[in-house]
Length: 114
Length: 107
Image 1 (cartoon, helix red, strand yellow):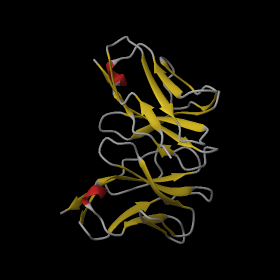
Image 2 (cartoon, each protein chain N blue to C red):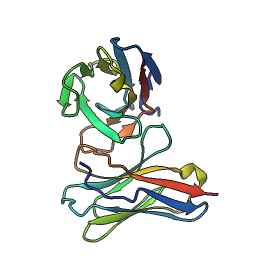
Image 3 (cartoon, each protein chain N blue to C red):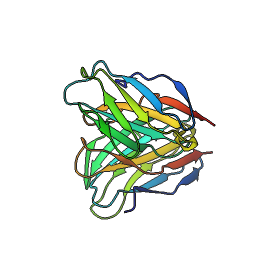
């Protein structure tokens, strides 16, 4: 049973470019969460999605960041016009049915902005 | 902010039991105690969780005090591969990570 999958594992972008991070939840899981870990810091919650719905985006920066979880396909975290401060590890987690259940994390995408 | 307090670092000899403490004095009745660990640069790994009773699985044991204001994660026979940052989390829904305990396993 495959775990949470994220790709790419490493992503390099120049300032001003767009970054797209993908997350495929565990089989049977319909809830996805995104977290960001800045260098030498703890993980911070960004957004919680169900299929076709954003449930809680209280941790998302108001500008340049967006997330979606379409009916078909992986969840996407999109960062427009990246800046050096966006360099971080972005982790996705999934749970079966709701926010209260155990979340299982993917291996992360390391974004480096030059 | 995280609702838990953990020592920043601990050492444990390989083969011995590692006992990681956590204080969560403001825990409410609906909140579970969760433990995750993060091995260098990897995604957080779920270890165990509990509400009131002590719990045990193939990885660890979780001891929760009767008043639920503190808990201890026990790794019964620590190995070098258990070197990681261990996060104690009190949650009902959202996960808020604190700074965790950096556990060093000494050969």
